[in-house]
Every structure is written in C-alpha cells, then in structure tokens.
Image (cartoon, rainbow, N blue to C red; front, top):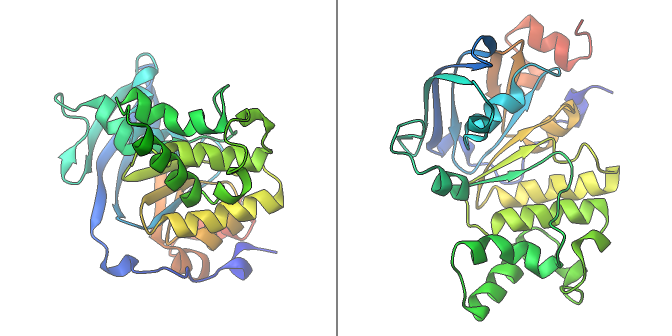
Length: 269
C-alpha cells in the first residue's frame, strides 16, 4: 500500500497563515572540505507546522537537519556556504551564541537515548544545567514536560525509577520530554520511530500532532506513510538536492516532479 492511501489532513492546520520561522538560502555543505553533501538548498519553514524530510539514504536529509542547530560544527573540516535564518537572525553569523541556539532547538535522535539516571532527573537535567535551582519550578517543568510528551500518566508514580526501566517507546517519549523541558522553539526529530514497534510509533505520531501547537517540528523519516500522516509540508531530497517541497497533500497526490512521483509510489530506482 503506497503513502497516498495513508494521507490524512492534520487536525490542527493553520499552516497557510503561519509566518516563516526558518529561512534557508542557497546552502551548500561539504564534509572534509571537498565532499559535497548539499547543493544550493533554499526553503522556508513555517512556524507551528510539521515538516518532513524524505528521500533515500545519503540524500542529505539528516545533514540539513543538523545544520539548524549547528551540530555539524562538531565534524572536522566541514564547509558551510549560504544562510540559515531563524526569526530573521542568521545562525551562522560569527556572533551567534551556539549554546543558546541549541537550547532553543531541541533534538530527538533515531534511537532512544535516556541518561543513566531517574525519569525525573532525565527531564530536570537540562534546566538544572541552565541554573534552575528552585524545587517547585523544577517539579513544574518536569510534570508539564512529561504531560506534553504524553508520558505523565504512565510514570507519575515511578519518577525515581531508572529511565532504563521504561520500554523503548516510553524512553523515546522521555527524550522528547527532556527536550521540551528546555522550552525550545523548534524540535528536530531524526527518524524518531525507526527503532520502535508499530504501537509506540503510533503514539509518537499522535504526540507530534499535539506538539506542533507549541513547537515547530522538522522530522527526517524514511517512511512515506509517516510523512503523509504527520506532516503539513514535505521536502523530497535526492543526492543532496532539494527536488520538491510543498504541502504534503500536494506532494503525495499531485507531485510536480517525476522523480518525486517515482519515489513516493515505490517505483524509484
């Protein structure tokens, strides 16, 4: 069954009227100085929407995602060209506070990665590191974050238990709660359900639909059905190029590019 049959209009959809939060202009990116991973990428991402990056392995999806919080800076000998602006500020300007940038942009990785500590301490870890000492404020942050991550009812009586006692799906929602606790504007999700079972995947997808009321979400996914279910906008990448970017319902029903059509219908070679 192809992704078109899974397409659903999101319950919360004000995307047409939402302002641009992220603007990407003429971005090129190189690993080790000469291995080009992205070619002249330009796109705008609207506030309080879900944007899916799709495409085959090695097409540049995760590379672009990691440019938004400058995680690629940690790789040796990378070269960035172009401009990425968030709220009108070029995040690659020399005066950018990278610590603050990464506070404003939460990240959820492919495999659940809770810290080796209690459920409570996982969520409180970031705020504590930012200097939050007040116990009542920490408690409030932890409860609110776990509720927003749809995990509170399952763990409220076991907050002192190790995070490793949770199931894989619960651990991933805990990682989302940990990111939410930092009060970010943007949530980046790099294949957040690829290691999860179908039931846990469904819970994460439902959660994403709720979270976009408070956050702007960008998700990298290999699953066409997932992009069709959760995203307002979808971008299709191929060999480091942005082939097509549009509303998800248009991408999956009337793609403008033949390469996009072949990919989403499973006829891609």
